[in-house]
Length: 315
Image (cartoon, rainbow, N blue to C red; front, side, top):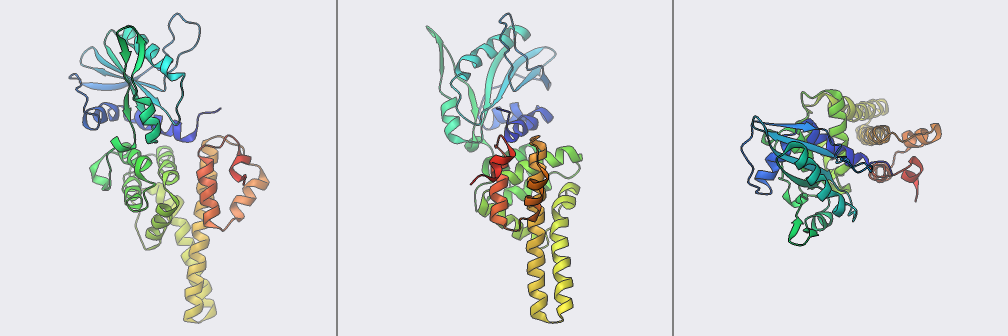
């Protein structure tokens, strides 16, 4: 099975900003860390003498002139019994490599997986490893763009974006925080935020977008706001052609709906492209022709974890 888009996206957040891991270990998990001057990403290949490959998702090394703590970061979307054997090997290998303390930090968007991951792992008589676990409840709620760097704001949206009440506000904070990022990172972070929203939260966000919200991110302006603007423009033109107030209102509503559908269709195609799933010409035509927002939302949610493009459309 190919790694999912969400799995790779979560790794990217910590790779782009390695300081995020120790900051959350200290503030959210209340772990006492040694003094350090820098946090940097190291090779995640932990193979030693065993011919079987051992590769963690990410290794972050805290240094203070010399290594003081090695953090093996693992993203878990589901429980995997095999990891209870490999995680101790990761810690042993990285501890021997850098001759410093080491730990496993598990990041998961699912609380049930967090409960599974934080159980102590018995290694042998009088020895065990207890992973540190960053589940949704441990991730801070970021509802104001000024509260955090983009990576923490996006992580907050992944953890809490499905909430129908707070999700839209958290998503707006994350999208606003993308200002100044390059287009590749903006594209990834935007898709992570948008795909993490529940149906109710997504509809509330779209209504807020339609009310005149001004995006700070150039990427969001280009790929989302333009869909809303196009819809409103088409609605105005149609309403004006009819020459009646009623026709104008109907035209605006219809144009806005078409703009939202177009934005959803483009978001779906971006998710499929980012996950390197092949989209045939008939499938692309089907996506672009769909105007039902609920259907498009359902397809986007499936696209985050689907193994094939056909699976996105399965009923």
